[in-house]
Length: 226
Image 1 (cartoon, rainbow, N blue to C red):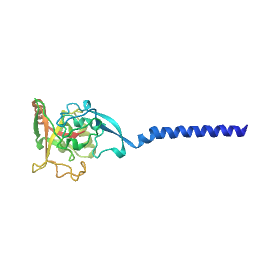
Image 2 (tube, rainbow, N blue to C red; image 1 turned 30 degrees about the vertical axis):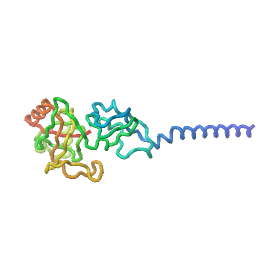
Image 3 (cartoon, helix red, strand yellow; image 1 turned 135 degrees about the vertical axis):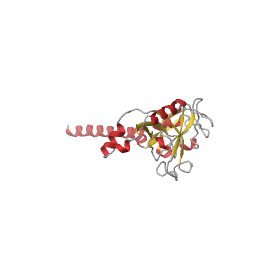
Image 4 (cartoon, rainbow, N blue to C red; image 1 turned 45 degrees about the horizontal axis):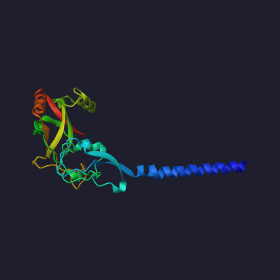
């Protein structure tokens, strides 16, 4: 009886092992050795304006060995809105940064490029780049005179409006010699060609009026990118 029970247990263990192996080979292994990337939903011709990226691209599991260098992930899809494709993209083709190598951006009828005066800005990331989606917040322009401790800084930065004045897109990032600031040696944001001096953004007349009113009321601007 005991010998028979051992045999049954042995068969059950073997059966469970076979199922586990099947599940690993079928699902687990591919899940561990793959990554979710954006691919084209259908053929996209060169020169296509991406008005709404979600209409053109979809997430898809790609094996790590087949993932292209510079492939864009699903959580970065909003960065593609307003871009123009620089080359033909076949259906299910991976979306890589080189596809938008010139970071082409288009303006709507009521929009224009506006240089954000450096004197208006209190803080801007040194790693900001052309094409970034940014949010602009306001802060008391006399903040430096009111700060004594690190705790004061944290309190002042969170005091007042919690929502941004408005969100927009960076068109150009310039250094003090009016040269575009880019990444060096292909190291994304790790090292820039020079220090950021000013940025130019997409605005409407209403947006610039909001910024002007904020500065005239004694505020400075804080720029952050997403």
